[in-house]
Length: 351
Image 1 (tube, helix red, strand yellow):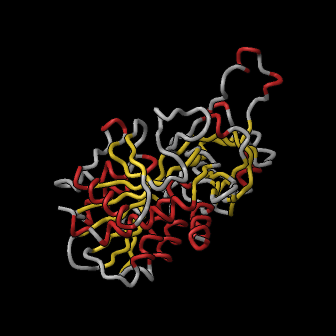
Image 2: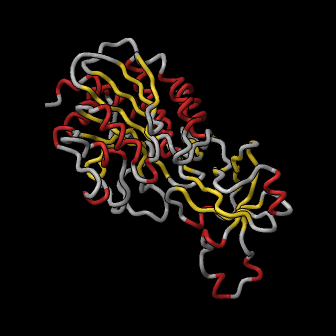
Image 3: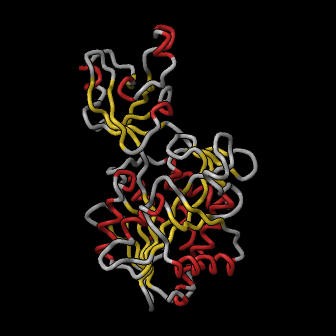
């Protein structure tokens, strides 16, 4: 468990907004090298590790990118205006400390706005929008900000490191989807030295948060027979969410997706569901089934590739996703890796 915790911390703390995943890619390539026969990086920046074997080609996919921000304007007083890269809930950002990544190194900054003390009564009732926020790096002017290295297009990530909560819970940024990346690596560690009835294509995908882009191109190029996407999903075990809205919980095992985005995303084939559920039973892992109405995953792009790729999704329930304080259970993460490893071992049963 401690090895898994350390792996998740290193991956989650690393910077890597959509389109700029190279730091995470380097970490993943390092982890894959002793576990597969070859590692490469494709045109879209996807990290591809291939372990050759007899039987079908099974793709394990987890996206490396996190949501972030990008500098779009530096005003005369040195304050930075920004746009979101990926799906932020505006009010989560206000008051956060951030790192601005510049060609000269990273700069500490804080996200500010007009204070409520000088707002009129109506404005105080409304959430502050991203367009009304700015980043303060301490610059005195536009020229000062430039001298510090800040320019249009600089990436911005949250200033946050993974930390432990009570029991086996941890909190941090980018668990969506560095937890999936850690899950994929952990599954390959379990499979190391064991004969597998498949060629494994382990992929860290790029730009999932802005359109499932890396998964789409990589699946086309690698042409797998089957795919398992390693992800996070939203639980309903905290205040403000009903069990009717979200029935899955932390600490009750990994989640197997039945459908997401009300079926507009992936509708997992019945034979894939049977395969994943049987793998969980064989591994002695508890699991939860999930039908989602919100977002989707790389499986949406992968399963529509060429003539179609039967695809499933194994997730770790994660509270407060798309925030700097996401929370998950390390036990759920470990059990998800066991489930995925067993699924690979039993892929010959999938007909």
